Length: 489
Image (cartoon, rainbow, N blue to C red; front, side, top):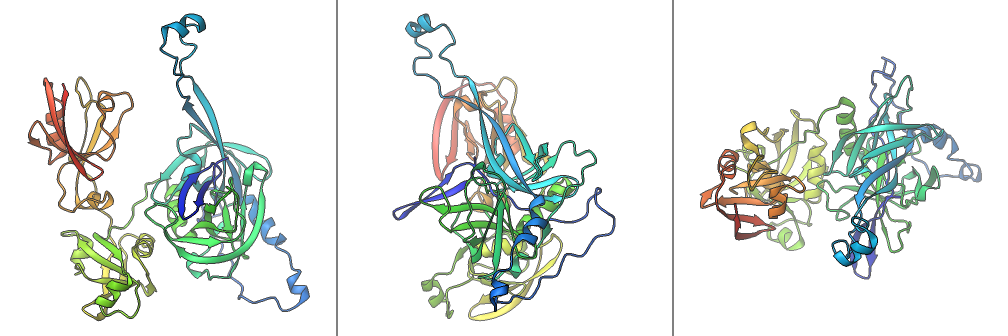
């Protein structure tokens, strides 16, 4: 079973991926398998507190009956290399046990999670950590039917993945309806549906304990719904629904000292999940907005220095030259307070709000500059496309064979935590067992120079690295440190 668990030990908090997964589904647009006329989603009933014994005794059963067919079990199989025996290459032991008997053999490992059907044609949303590295993935419906699925999208930035049933036949899958997760309030009742510990589909109830939680995981879009509905290993990728039976979040992580639920669970909001699901339904890639500025949270000292009454907002510390933020007139020292009227308390909240805006739309950002608050219009843009001349792969008889690199631009520099004016090419892939792998190159290494030649472009790297020389003098940056090494050609 696979489940993302954040284990608390004393004061330290360590993230531990146990197995299980939490699933949810946010997109409910019509597909080819659905009826041509879209049905308007049900309108939420007004929130009221139970006022009588009869109301207190009301059941969640109608909601569960309507929603549970949309939640599936996800089975992921991985082929892993077992650890080698320390005696594998010892001639003495090979003589008695036979050559190869002590060598490593691949072994099969299985994990279990949950998922949510988001399209009637057989598209399922789940957590990426449920199916990461899987060589075979299957889903099981609540009625026991099983289907093989293909992985359409693995999005590390949100820890979401989209699956598609390989051979749906004439099956019309029960897709869930998405809710506007921004309408959630602390105290709202919610239900978590999934397959905890592999015991079978299970429903738990609770309330929304908090909203816009950050610091839970090291993902790019931290903005979690916190709930005390019991979530356990196997729930990952499962649905968090409101009492109208609409998806409000995808269960994804828990805080725990034991690996089981202690009433602190987290879900990815439906408004973010809907974007990933929509891209999966359309079969395309996820294209996200790019602001083109680095930011930090406003603490009490910064707030006092800026004359702010309370510490909130996202403080711009650096602006990419000719990026969307620069063209809209933003500069270092500006504080972004809100996006389209919704307050943002820190950079994570701003990133989430901007990421949910469609490309090409105009959004309004509230900015404080020199004690004056004003609204600024921003055209929502994607990062510049990566051209063929900005990437290179080395093959053939070269010491760098198996390496793929990309030329550093402002958007990539921002994503990798580099200065906007960073030079060099960044390693994007290293083929296992290749000469580059044996040499020790790693993904995210920044190659600055080869044999005293600056590697400012992908073309320069391709032309230089394809040569055969006696030795290579390599200057690269890894984890913020610049190193120089000499290797044979």
